Amino acid sequence: MPQHTDRAYESQLGKLRSCLLEMGGLVEAQIAQAVRSLTERDPVLAHATVDRDHTVNRLDVEIDELSMKLIALHQPAARDLRLITTALKITTDLERIGDLATHIAERAIELTAEPPLKTYVDIPRMAELASSMVHRSLDAFVREDIELALQVCGSDDTIDGLHDQLLEELLSFMVKHPQAISRIMRLLFVSKYLERIGDHATNIAEMVIFLVKGTSIRHMDTIPREL
Amino acid sequence: MESSPATAPALDSPVKIAVRNLSVFYGATQALRSVSLDIPEARVTALIGPSGCGKSTFLRCLNRMNDRIHGARIEGSVNIDGEDLYGADVDPVVLRRRVGMVFQKSNPFPKSIFENVAFGPRVHGMRDPVALREVVERSLHQSALWEEVADRLGSSALDLSGGQQQRLCIARALAVQPEVLLMDEPASALDPIATAKIEELIQELKRDYTIVIVTHNMQQAARVSDYTAYFYLGHLVEFDATSVLFTNPSRQETEDYITGRFG
Image 1 (spheres, rainbow over the protein chains, first blue to last red):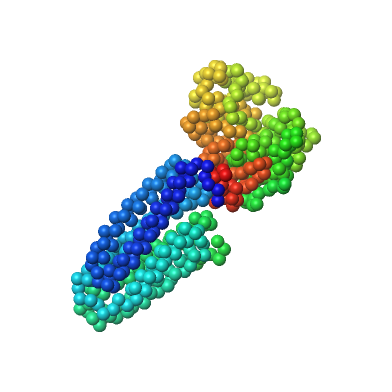
Image 2: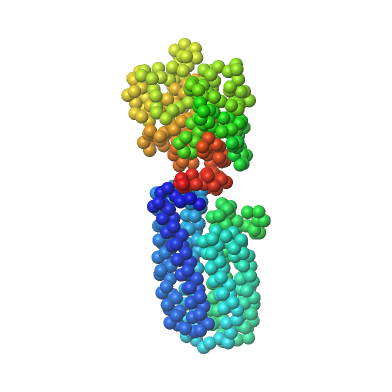
């Protein structure tokens, strides 16, 4: 694609992209760190994860401001307009993912203060999938890869399934071990957070499809065959 | 080279002007290359594209203004309500009554405000002072100028501000009750407030008139028009509903132009 005649505009759009990627990288690391602090019972790492959220929040505000400035000063059209719209939407998703990772770390801090549970069951597997969904959705954004974005949307059913399964298992565990209910509840929250991260990654992937094709597939029960 | 848009949009209004394979030559230079386009009735159609792309040439073909240019040759057809504009029995003067035009630079006659607006109807034979007065008042109302000039219809049109002069020219075009209004950069020489007034006026006028507007201001095209045609090097590259063309154009050339990538 040819460059904008207005170089400053071109570089500001480039900056918008790189801010989003920086934010994406940060929240990916946040998820990994949060889950590790949980499974390894490491409160120091958990606190570090919570502290890191400031940077993500700062980037969220920065992306909002940059987007508004671009709209006000350059009256973007077509793909540029879709990029800025996409940025405004996915920054919110990324910021929420950061918050959810922080919540996981907070639950980890609480759980570390109590005796260990025998099992973290499928939490690491869910975390891996959630993290990979975020990673792939951002990859799809960078490469403007619709196939990859659709794949992320497809993964959402898998992570929802894992969450439901975990819910069943933990419920029966609670019946058998009532003394562990408060700890199991915390673990259930973590599972729910990871499931929500999957939802946000799906939102990002849907916006990538909008960015590339100009059509919205949000709130559709099934993904259309023809995009 | 043949050119017709990759896709013609479904129009939400009947076709007022049907242009088919229109080519225009100025001597050896071909300014328009086989353009086909349907202009919908009671809608605003914007023509955009860089200088020299053929959009003004196209506009001028719609009321045979190119007839007056020495060495201009036209191929193809332009039908208004199914009638061939270039038919042997068509009188360009009568045609221009049906298809009015407003230019970039306001060009009022050095006469009174009243006489400017009454000029067209007089040329077409209206003599009755009461009828003339009615036409002038109606046209000035339509062009949103009446309130500002009602008490000084006898003063010179040249005393009006630039924006007022342009609205006077619109009133003058409307006085002969045209069906189509062609506008060639009607607001490019005006300040933002006068521009906003003209744009609002265009929205009012499209209820009764078919409007075709040439503009270099893409945001203006996006704001005022229902359909947009993008011209480049004499070709019609893309024609679509304005809301589609400015958010998700189907041709890369259009995308590059409207996003400011001029190569």
